[in-house]
Each structure stands twice: as structure tokens, then as C-alpha cells.
Image (cartoon, rainbow, N blue to C red):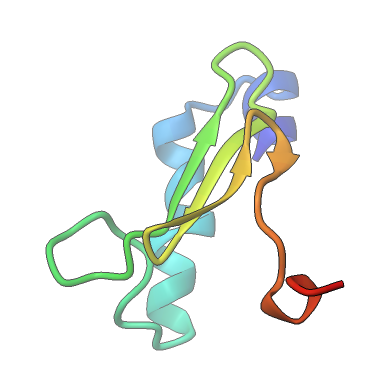
Length: 79
């Protein structure tokens, strides 16, 4: 995505469906691919200038915050 938008100057609105809604549809992932009521609530937040990953929320749970992992697996909880 970053290469297409930053280096090749393709509009993000044209590139984004390739890795979101189109992919979800082809893989038959009905709960993924769009921000809509009843869907999985997966969100990827990118930095505007570089398109680097800033935040990732999966099923309503933040796993990346400010570009860094922000969770601990349950099996590591007591270690």
C-alpha cells in the first residue's frame, strides 16, 4: 500500500480496497473488510505522511499503539 501511494502516487481510495474489502470478499470473510455495524471492528490507523502503521485495533482490542505492540499474550501473563 505504502509503495503504491507514496512512491507511485496512486490514490489511497483506489488502493485501500485491494487490501480490505476486496480481500475479505474473495476470502469469504463476512465480518471483515469494512467498518460497519455488526462487523469485526478491525481498524488500521496509518500516519498520513508516511503511511507507517500507527495503531491497530482487532475485534475492538488495541494491539498496536503509536507503532509499538501494545498487548501481552495470556500465556505470558504469569511469566
